[in-house]
Length: 307
Image (cartoon, rainbow, N blue to C red; front, side, top):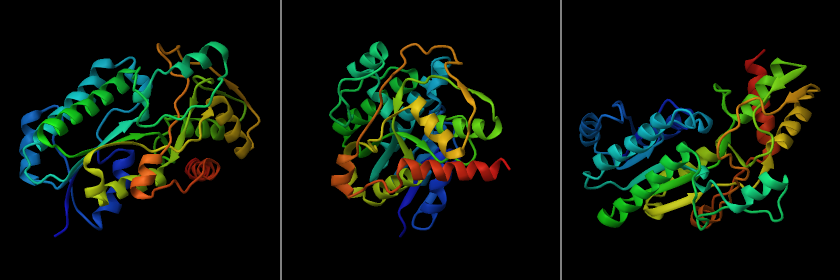
């Protein structure tokens, strides 16, 4: 029989892209219940009896979490606890795969160095041995979910994988996140655009590579279910200001960017960058689409869309 997957967040960026890929090889179900309503979640989970849970549902706009702390904490943490506690009652659950975030690393000394000096003395790549210091309501909730999964794993042998995802790009229907925001604004305004912060450094993964990781982890249950936490890289950190200049060069955009057009974030993190050694050793996975190629693809998506 086909393995049964229960997915949450099916209508989101990753969920909607994963759905057609998973439907071919798995018996795919989409959670209908409100994650904050434990009883209905429990009933639905027990009626489906999934082999694998793919938990993507979350509020993910990190910046908004600074202003909507309670909503982010409830949906991202309480919602996840409700789902875990429901799934804990399934006898043959093979894996609970959780969409975590590289934002859990949060504050590290290198971030303060960049904030204070505008540069860094050493290049740093975060991995699973880097101690998390989440520094946004979004990241605190995601790290709390990892801790809850670790507790459930130690206490009840609850199987899980937590994927600390990097900034993904290549969206086709959402221009809120930085890559798509820069591209769409440049395509629509030839003279001036307004952006947020120019100094932070971030790394980026193209959506197809991220989907590939999810498929690999879902398909390799035995290798990944022992409380695996993994970063997915790739190690390609770039300062947002330089990232925007790179995109401008590709589009041929000659306008002016007005930076820092948003209120300053409390606790801004100036350095987030991660590798993928663990997932490479475990599943022989490497990203296939480099940053330049991925940006070209994303520009093409939005150029067609905005015609």
